[in-house]
Structures are given as C-alpha cells and as structure tokens.
Length: 302
Ligand code: CAA
Ligand code: NAD
Image (cartoon, rainbow, N blue to C red; front, side):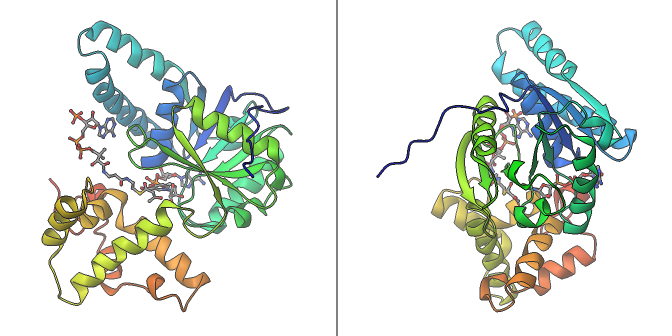
C-alpha cells in the first residue's frame, strides 16, 4: 500500500518568518539559502562581531553563486546579492528574535545541555504556532525537544555542508511530531529548493549513519598503518567516484564536529564497534587541529 503524503501545509501555513540561531558554518548557509528563496530571516549569534563575520561570509558565497547564475549580466547579479542580504537581519537576543517567527532552526554548538537551555528559553518567548527544529548532526531530536512544552511542534531539519551547494535536506520526525508540523517542514524544505527525505529520529538519520562510520574506518586504516590519508583520498575519489576523499571531507566538516558525533554515539551505544573512539582523531582535536577552519587537520591548508 502506498501512503500518499498530504500536500497541505496545515493550520500553521507556509513559513514566512524564519529565525536561525547560530551563524557559523551551517547557520549562515541556511540563512543565506532561505533568504535567496524569498524568506525573511533573522540570524542570531552571541556577538555582533560573529554576526558581521557571517554576513561577510554569506556575501562571499552569494558572489560565487551570482558569478555563475548571472554570468552574462553582472548588474542583475549585484541586485540579486543586495536583495538576498536585505532579507537577512541580525540579533544577539535569541528570545527577542523568535517573537514573530513561524519557524526556528537551531544550528549552535553540538551539545545537548546548551541546546536544551536555549530551547527552554525560546519556548517561553515564541508564539504558540512557532515550529522549533534543530540541525543537530547526532543528538536525538527527542532529547532536545524534551526541554519544551511543544514536543508536537518540534522536528529536525538536517542540512549538509556547503548548504548553498548540497541539494539534500533530511526532515526528521520524532514519535511526537504532529502531521501539520511534519508537512510544514517538508513544504518549507521544498520552498528552499532542497530535495527532502523523511527520516526517523535514529542515530545519524540516513546520511551521517553511513558517512561518519565510513570516514572513521578510513582513520582506522591509517591508525593501523595500512594506507596513507592522501592515497585513501585518491582511491575513494577515483575508485568510488566521491567528490572528496574521507580525509578531505573530515577537514571540511571539522574534526571537532566528527569527534562530537562519534563520542555521543559511543556514549549511547558503547559496544558498537563502528562507534569506538579514535586515538588519532582525539589527538588532532586535542592539538586544536580542527580542519579547514583552523588551517590544519589531517592536511595543512593555506
Ligand atoms: N557557496 C557558494 N558556492 C559554492 C560554495 C559555497 N560555499 N562551495 C562551492 N561552491 C560552488 C562554486 O560555484 C564553485 O565554483 P567557484 O570556485 O568558481 O566559485 C563550485 O561550487 C565548485 O567548487 P570547487 O571547485 O571548490 O570544488 P568542487 O567541484 O569539488 O565542489 C563541493 C565543491 C560541492 C563542496 C564538492 O566537493 C562536494 O560535494 N563535496 C562533498 C561535500 C559533502 O559530502 N558534504 C556533506 C558533509 S556531511 C554533512 O554536512 C552532515 C553533517 O552533519 C556533518
Ligand atoms: P560552528 O561552530 O561553525 O557554528 C556554531 C555557532 O553557534 C557559532 O557561531 C557560535 O558562536 C554560535 N553559538 C553557540 N552557542 C550559541 C547560543 N547559545 N546562542 C547563539 N549562538 C550560539 O558549527 P556548525 O558546523 O555550523 O554546526 C552547527 C550545528 O550544525 C551543530 O549542531 C552541528 O552538529 C550541525 N551540523 C554540522 C555540519 C557540518 O558539516 N559542520 C553539518 C550538518 C549539521
């Protein structure tokens, strides 16, 4: 029996006002693409300095998009960029920033305690109809939603880095997410130009459950002295058709993020052989070698 998904967006209606909390790698990408697809976005972070940096990064990314999209008409490209930037406002007060929101997407640090503290405050400040979501890579959405009184209006929106380029959006439904919320999230993902796949609230959803153990198995090959990172990267690009090898991708994603994901899964399922900690990953993170964002990870970056 094929189940037909309702196309109705339910009582909540389409998302007009979006608040993105956390303006790092992911939050800035999400804000940028949402604004480029006509949504009004409020972007939140801890300081104006961080927000100014993010606005600069979004502008650079939009320039790359415009260079291709408006190759024959740079003037239209400039208008496109200023139009998108004009739909993004910034705020350092997350409670104020959700007062008008239809949807909140959280993309702050991968830490359950910090996320719960944030959502518990937002729950008191946001209107009844506001849907809450997290972009977490590895924490159960159900655990984050437990900090609020709106577990039925809570789901996961899991984006991929770099957000302007990656077409996929995983839409995570917990056992408590109601139909209206889930349908609104699927519609919102499509309105953002993404291909949406529904996921249950299980470790790593779909992509990370397959991708992260694969990347860690590559690290284990190196730890055993079976192959060198550069050779493994060449092998996976040319032998499996991946756009980046596992070490290039680890540096791109961030080794701290990789470690957060692995440690969380290991804590929840200590006997799982694919979730065992990696000495090499721990060493690099301990030395502050987090990948592209710090200039060095498995590789040195200029
Ligand atoms: N913003 C805008 N445009 C961008 C961009 C960005 N941040 N990054 C790349 N592009 C575009 C540009 O048009 C660029 O051309 P220019 O350099 O002329 O501007 C074009 O893409 C091609 O880029 P590159 O030549 O630098 O490299 P590429 O052809 O290898 O493409 C890539 C880049 C799309 C990132 C590709 O390498 C790729 O798909 N890599 C794998 C990424 C991946 O697997 N991501 C998922 C990570 S897991 C995750 O995110 C989940 C999690 O929870 C951890
Ligand atoms: P990041 O470190 O680049 O950005 C996080 C931002 O959140 C920082 O700017 C920080 O100042 C801000 N922040 C922290 N606490 C805050 C608070 N209480 N209020 C407001 N802002 C706060 O991290 P990222 O890579 O963008 O990851 C963000 C989230 O997205 C994490 O949950 C991560 O697991 C997930 N994710 C990451 C990737 C990836 O490839 N890096 C992919 C998908 C999902």
